[in-house]
Length: 255
Image (cartoon, rainbow, N blue to C red):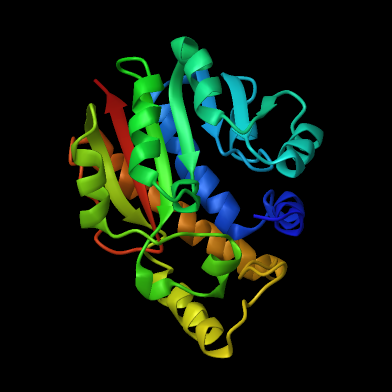
C-alpha cells in the first residue's frame, strides 16, 4: 500500500461500513476468547493506521507493528495510547513480545506476502503455546479486480488451499469461515463493473469511498450482524462456518 492509500484509511476507517463492520466482528471474537478482565497483550501485525488495535485500548496492552513509516506515523497520531513499532523485521519483534501476547492479529496482511506459508510457519515459531492467532484475508478469485492489484495483493483466498496451508502447522483450528457474506452479491457486482472499466470505484486506487450516512449506517449494521453467527459456531465448537463471502476469517490456537 502507498501513502495515499494509508491516508485514505486513516480518514475513513473510523466510519466506513467495511472498516467498522470488520472491526466489530474482530472485537467481538477477541473479547469472547480473551475477556477484558483477563488482561494480556494483543499484538496487531501489519497494523496499518491502527484502527483495529486502537479499539482495545483500556482493556488490554495494545501493540501494533508495521513495515510502513507512513502507516505508523498516522497510527501514532490517531491512537497515542497504543505502542506502535515500525520495523522491516516484524517477526523478530513478534518473537520478542510473544511471552506476554495472548492474541496475535493478522488482519488483511497475508495477501500482501509472496510466500504466505513460510511467513505463517515462522510466526508459529514465535508464538507461545495456547496463544491465539486471528487472521482475515480477502476471498474468492472471482472478485479479483484493480482494487486488489493497486493494493499489492498476490492472491485472494479459497477455503481448500488455505486449509492446506494451515495443515502442517502446530495449531488447533477453532474456526475457519467466510464472512462479509450477506453483502457478497453487492460487492461482486461492484467488482464486476470495476473489472470491466479497468479502474477502481473509489479513491486512491481502491473501491473505498464514504457512502451517504444512512446507506453507510445500514451497510454497517448488516455486516456487523455476522458476528452473531461466527460466535455461535465458535461457542459450539463447529470450526467450519459460511461457505461463501468476500473475505475469510480464521482463529487458530498454538499447540
